[in-house]
Each structure stands twice: as C-alpha cells, then as structure tokens.
Amino acid sequence: MSDDATSNEPAEPAIDPAGDPEVLLDVYDLDGDGEISPIEDARAALGVVDARLEEIAEESGIKGKIADAAHHIVDKLDND
Image 1 (cartoon, rainbow, N blue to C red):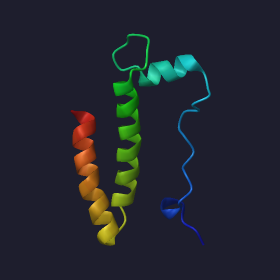
Image 2 (cartoon, rainbow, N blue to C red):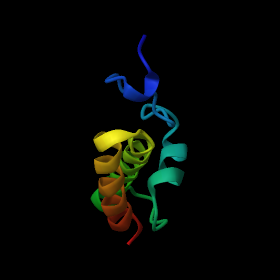
Image 3 (cartoon, one colour):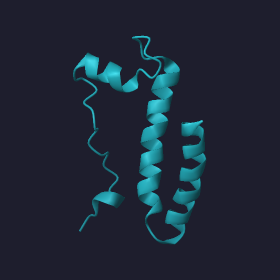
Image 4 (cartoon, rainbow, N blue to C red):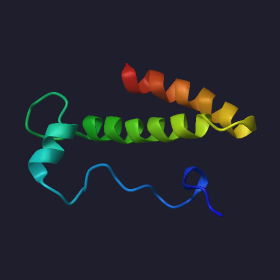
C-alpha cells in the first residue's frame, strides 16, 4: 500500500531532459539569449524543489508544517 505522494521514488519529469533541445531551451532560457546559464539551471531546479515542498505541505502533521515553512522560504527565493 504505497502512496505516490509519500513514495521515495522520483516523479516522472515533466520534460524529458534527453528530449528536443529547442523545447528545453524554450522552457529554461529565461532571458532569451539562446543559452541556459547556470543561474537559469539553478532556478529551474529550485522550482522543482518548491513544487515538491508544496505537495508535501498538503500533508497533515509536523512533516506538512515543516514542508509548508520551507516552501514559503524557497518560494520567496524562486520568485525574487
């Protein structure tokens, strides 16, 4: 009886990293310079972490409360 939300297995990526380079560039190239900079790469990773924390924050108990607090901090960093 495993629940997908609490599984330790990684979720399927929304975009296949080995997929079409033009799609990856469109998604991750935030400044439109035609390259994915280390900053843009880090922001993309931070967005994934933020989304996962938001999912965990919906759980009840201490785990949900800690994830909610962490989500608010990461969300601030991601959106600024």
